[in-house]
Length: 555
Image (cartoon, rainbow, N blue to C red; front, side, top):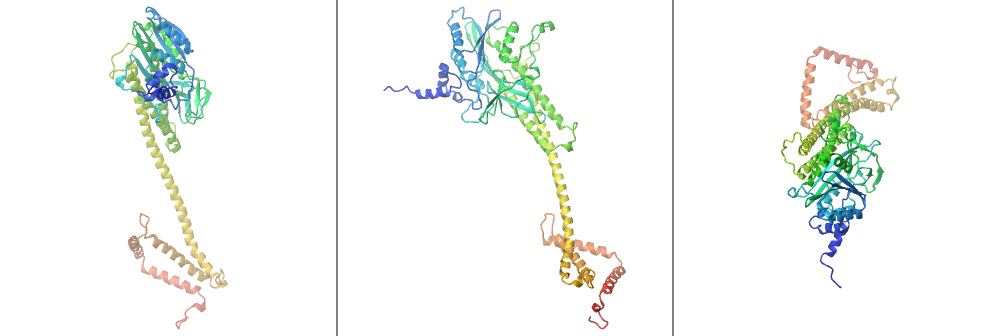
């Protein structure tokens, strides 16, 4: 039996693991590169898309820059078209073709990748849907900046804003059903907004062929349906009618006159592929696409930058709304509840995280396109994209700082509300303590009375109206005073820390004794003697004759 070639089983395993990217011969090439690029073998765990459809549009440019459009959805027809051009004569091969690939259907990707030998890292970056992946079997690591060559290939993330008239379901896990990319929504104020921020990606690749060239733009399909509950493992596909938020991005063409601007109606903004085709069919004369394929990315860069401007205005409006809700113009600060502050804090934390992602993506765009750090003077040049991306980067950084400042302000407000709540609870506790003190006072006053009445009720002569009822009063009143005196003495031993100590008792007793004797010293001695004689005489007058002492001595 012949031995299998070395590494045959390894290649077979690689083929099985790379099936999420492509099929056929290009899949074999991807499998052989797994050792160099480990991220090729791991599919996107957060994407529910499996075998979604796609299409390819070819634009052939003549010498007059007039494009010829051809659409493909069948991989076999696309292969025949590409191979026919490659096998043509030298004069017929001098063509300038731009391929617009919408979606990452494995069959179409296999044809495009195999015929043009596409860089596999570009395909993986375009396919990934997560901003970050903490899982072991995942990979979202970019190449070193020193390896980037924007004239040949680059990768650009951006965002599209869609308005959903019927609203989105009250869940946080929404994804585009055709691309698997996440759709974020925000609360403004407190309730979920009907605006969805869809993650988008575009990638560019090109190669020159003598006097001709081939360029490819990988684009995301439009959002027609969404998946719900992807993280829970029970994804539900729903149709969600939507339209571009506020009508979509503004047109970026520079017209010489108003009549010139009125000659075209503008892009549909329903699909980035159709928008790119619109600009090539209506404004291809504004650029020179004869020699450098990089010029084909100009309209795409402008679309990306224009979408970022829509995103910036939406984020600014949202932060302004949250900032205004923190002011005292619409409500009294004493009426704000802690739950309200916690909800706004959560919203601001979400926006701070998103603004950080927006800034990171913009920095990656500047690095991928090798845009200089210092802006050159491009006044009057509508095709200069460097100034656009620098401005967008500054605005995004400003929004991030504004969100963090609002978080600090809301944290201070939450502290004020917390202190106010603590004060209310302390006041409530003090009121409850006073209520308990009153009950304790009543108990201390009536407990001796109940005890004395219980003792003297054993005989009828001590009942009210009896001959010895005065004894009850003479015993009960001093007993009440004795109980209050004992409690007062015990309380003298408690310090500020709530612990009882003999040292504290002696110091308090010494100070209280001085105050009491000082008060009595101001009274005339005659008054004291009169009070004692009246009290004793009154007691003897109420006592029966049998209990009065005789002149002889003992009763």
